[in-house]
Image (cartoon, rainbow, N blue to C red; front, side, top):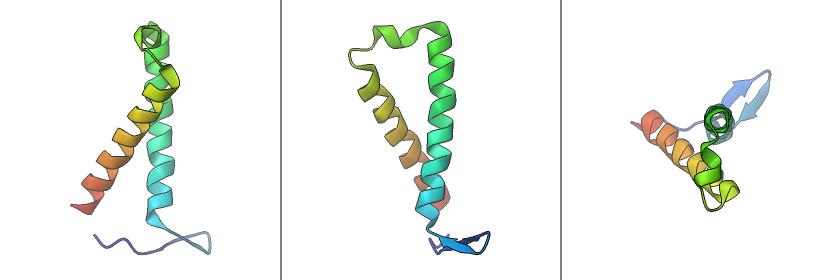
Length: 67
């Protein structure tokens, strides 16, 4: 797939921005799942951990779409 602009309601948007929104939504879902079981209390720095998970999810989405 080529990373060309996508027309969203008449506005051309970079595909990376849509992937970032999708990764953020997935990360929010994962964080709620982890918070439900109280697993974030075992992490040294929860905000840094959530950011790292976001980067991993965003990278995975980019690699899957680029394939």
